[in-house]
Image 1: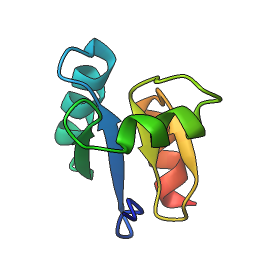
Image 2: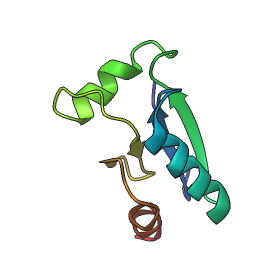
Image 3: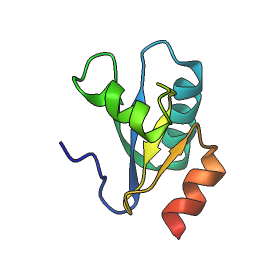
Image 4: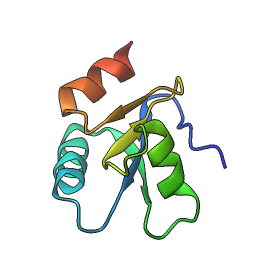
Length: 85
């Protein structure tokens, strides 16, 4: 499955227990940035995708941008900068 998001939005891989994920979601909501959340514990194949993007680690949040690039645990400012680029 292709998780590349539409322009101006991101795809965020997360888990239900991840505090960093909750923080980023709250910041995205407050900033009006759209995102699709994918829980790697519930969606088959996504834990492996996150591992591939993070050198074998299941680190969340992992974000995919519209250009296909990714970032691990980005700050809100990093997300804004990447979406503006």
